[in-house]
Amino acid sequence: MSDAEKQVRRVIDSYSAAVFARDVEAFMRLYHPTVRVFDTWGVWLYEGAPAWRIAVEGWFASLGSERVKVSFSEVQSTVEHSLALVSAIVTYAAESAQGEPLRSMQNRITWVLRESGHVFRIAHEHTSAPVGFEDSKAILART
Figure (spheres, helix red, strand yellow):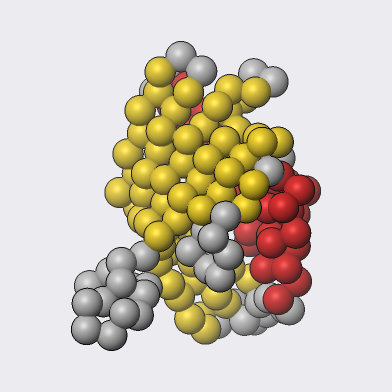
């Protein structure tokens, strides 16, 4: 595994750990200051880390005592010099404070990572879910 591939893996692992810990600071360190986020939920676009931070703080605060385990599957990445492209299926699985499963959902995610300060940071994030033709509802579990 190349150093660049290790850096991509570090971003994925750090993302999962920060969400589980509800650690806003660790989570935001993964993002470039000028990040552009196309999120799945409610808002068309978050432009820049300060706007994204507000959304993340709200998300983590909304969890109460719950924790969210994040797992990535079907990860594909391409690394060229100071840029990396990553796409994956991401599962967000909520657990009670006692570790009991509560609910889960899946998204598709695409990241553009840009080298900043000798590490890759997320410069663009796009999450999505397919929409059903008949009911126009997001499909949040892969069948």
